[in-house]
Length: 64
Image (cartoon, rainbow, N blue to C red; front, side, top):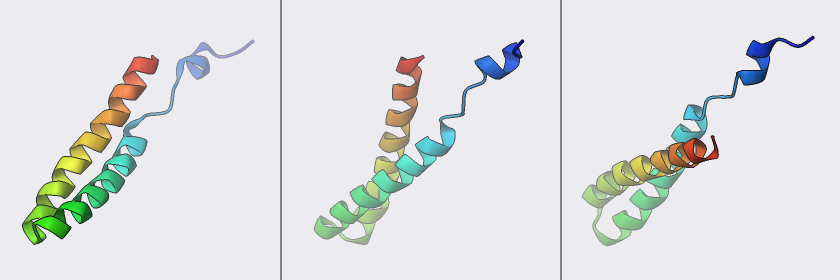
């Protein structure tokens, strides 16, 4: 006999989304800092982090 609670439990996608957001934010910030400077890094980091984390969360939701 198996426990039904153990079968339905899935790992949370949040840690993977945070990591993807940080990586995407750093890359986007670096690329935009080449063209704009420090302000471009800050804006690129925020936008890249939001887009990277949302992409992982949406992809996880579509798998369900």
